[in-house]
Length: 201
Length: 201
Image 1: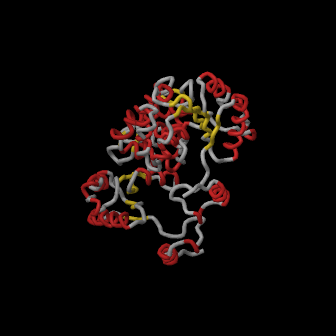
Image 2 (image 1 turned 30 degrees about the vertical axis):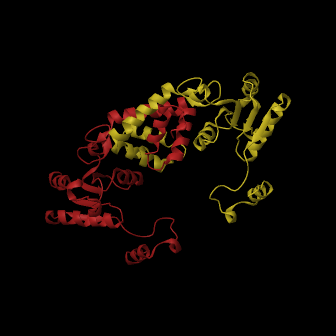
Image 3 (image 1 turned 90 degrees about the vertical axis):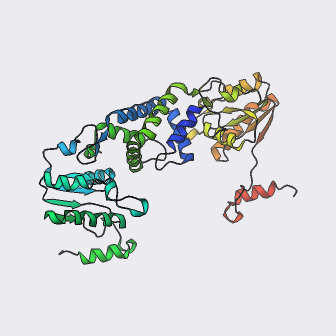
């Protein structure tokens, strides 16, 4: 980019945009030019929104969600069933479940999955606080809404072991055919799970 | 996104990020979470870089490039040959040519292409200032570095007509096989152009 000579401000903007997931050097250049073309409609508001996010948004000390207040609005929501606790890997998963709007429970964000190869052990996840919460908040059901990946399932089993002595009901999401899914395009594992878990029509 | 309840600041950040080219609603959510995780390394610096870009970067009144000074650093560069003027569609094309570093000329950014269907006529492009510059700066060669698209070529022919009476040498980029390109994957038009323009080995 040294040859662009369009001012170090532009080069710096492009370099930082390229660090966003989903943007590479080329799309970062495109995004930077788009921002400069839409100075008042996009560049200004986005700079302000980032400044506001930087100042106001912080992780919730209870559940690990991100919000402008601590505890977050989900933890403060009195209408949510305090007896159900949904364990998720990331805030993105929490948002996905909230969009589905099928649960009226509280959350606990682990902040990742156990991954010995990447050096992520139990102490790097919010596991100790999970046990504390389950006991302090008198939770009756822990719903393990982790990803259906090897890492997710390993983490789920670890959490199961942690909670084993507390005598709490633990559940996991159902496996099966996604809505709109075509059997011909599904992997054998999912199909086998859907057959094993078949229900009366 | 109303169900996310993660604060209007986050929703606003996601909505604005989703307006960047190359980012949709899902990747904007991912980018927002990435920014919040990397608050000090990325969110803060990017907010500052956008603020700096908003305040300092403006279009060059001479060539249409974007820079922190006006005229831009390319127009001010004394080492560039003032007798050669490269006409490009957009600033992105200017940057691409600068990366190629094969030219030591000045530029003129049209700001788009003629496109009657989109309501873009000659008055919407920097065409009048091009003729003025060619005459005032005693340009001897105009290099039409427009895209090899229908719109680009239409625009090139329009510029050719504009400059016809000035008796100036006008050139265009060569067509041919891209470096690293495989003939089997090239379209017939490019191959035919490459054959017609063949040169002695």
